[in-house]
Length: 153
Figure 1: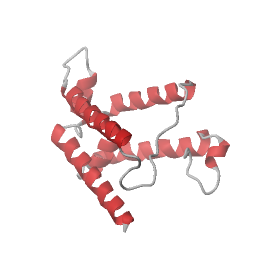
Figure 2: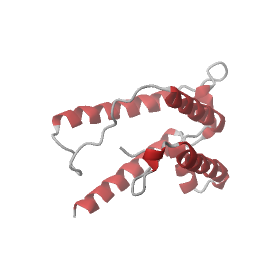
Figure 3: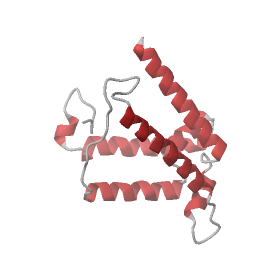
């Protein structure tokens, strides 16, 4: 029975996220590129969207400190304290460059597909291809062990 609540919570969160992307205009690559164009015709609207997201996330972190365990799981699954290394910096730079050129990151790209914008299909295919190439050729061997997801902790 607990699985149905988890599925419904995921469906509700995804629906809310997608609606928020559409309502805020963040599914429009032109608007995202406008935010990144600080020396030209800058559009600050993304800053307000990011501020709202950080505020909601901060409330979630505070709530997690009061609850001994999550409502729909046995424990919190938090990332360990990793170090900032060359791979992290390089991956962040590549992600940022792709975001700046395409005007989309993974969430809005998939939401655009769901909204029927087939011209985004090339972006999503290239994104998935990049993920596959990374997981197949750039993950350490121990992360690719059978039975486990690459990069899982």
